[in-house]
Amino acid sequence: MDEVEIKNAVIESASLTTSERGLLTSYITLDYGGSGQGFGGYALYLPRSWLHHKPNLGYAGHFIFRVMEIAGVDEWKLLAGRTIRAKSSWSKVHAIGHIIKDDWFNPSIDFAEKKQP
Image 1 (cartoon, rainbow, N blue to C red):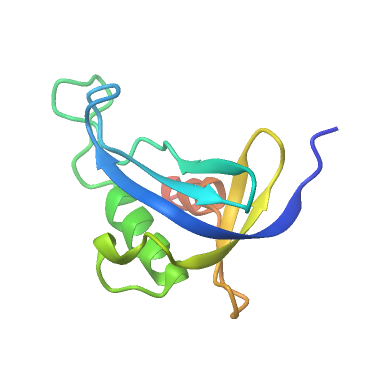
Image 2 (cartoon, rainbow, N blue to C red; image 1 turned 180 degrees about the vertical axis):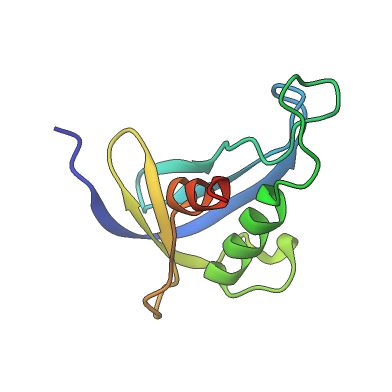
């Protein structure tokens, strides 16, 4: 079974890119102290050339804002070195959380809510 644990993590790096598949994605790399894991990879924006292009989904802004809010920074470039919590299993980081506050960001839940009218 892929059990979910809560772990402290340090953000090693953060990226915003269109290079992997031609769509906007973001990753943060987490260091658990001896092991690590990536968080992100959601399609934050699909270019006009994509079949499912919708310009006003709001995923990119929501993802970027919540990652910064959880890490307690006001600039993306300040994410590296910040300590957060992660709800993760062996195969996936399900959510990230503020290191002190009970504030969690789970993109799967948040983005499912955005799809509802």
